[in-house]
Image (spheres, rainbow, N blue to C red):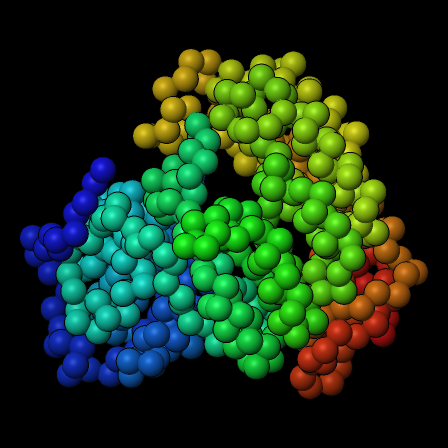
Length: 448
């Protein structure tokens, strides 16, 4: 267990400037990675504003720049290092902070890339105070608080859809995944804080909130008085929000009880994103996944039968060690037999510190990319069919924002993205009925 709770100072300052107390306190936050990171960046921004800092629009000059990093793949790590270096180059006199999962796993490297302060994930709740004090060096610890501290986000500016982080951490330790080391054990936001967070989102004008976390299906199990995921869904249904969406749910946590709640609800969106990872029992076992293909199929087919118009999305990893052509064909066969709308495809990334990194029969990168391309083509075809099936059917949709002059992007409850011609200023706040008419330029267009 690492515990670097004492700051280690860099040998030389990265820039020479007056203390923040003597300057305008303007800040930028650069966010890499998942929806949880996006939420945490919003919470940090509001915390900094509460301490007298001023957010800089666009790419303006700032005295403080925070890079919220990701480490899920080698590419994520590379992007994190490059972003820190770019920020240091473009803001040579700024106080640069690196936080997030890359900071937790590779703190010294983040410091070398140009950060003044590197704060691991366990320090995020205190990060605004550290910035205000101009703390320097590396702060990384594995000593995570047993309860998830609330991160206050009153609302994402100008958006009808918001996010609420209700859980952090993961204890699954899948053989390919570094995230349990970066995020620590599962911690749940207490139910009273969930209610308060949803109320803030509603008051801020959001009409949809996405419940998000690292392993959201574990919500409630670590609380002093343990609760289950269906208790979280009940809280969401009672929030007064028109729409609540589940970000992602593990196969074994997609239970009949959860599915039945979504099917019967007027609040919970008919959209489930489930990480499959492989359609081969042998590869799933090697990954350390706690289910087999038949269990996955049973859960998915039950959901499809119970939830009308369900949008299903899956995560898939290609090229896990030992994945031979026959295993990939098994994955393809399973996918062809299921009615899904899209895939998120990830070529396997070898992560030091995980069991899979030392497994034999590592798959060449070219093969990983080739298999990923096949699955992405299948995903594009299924997504096209999913959208074509909506043509001519009137569906309620929520405006997400302008994309160009004269066009407005909206999102339906089943996650369908639609576009309408929109010539007036502003956008509708509540759901509006739209009727998809045609697909043009890979976009589903509709009329009001």
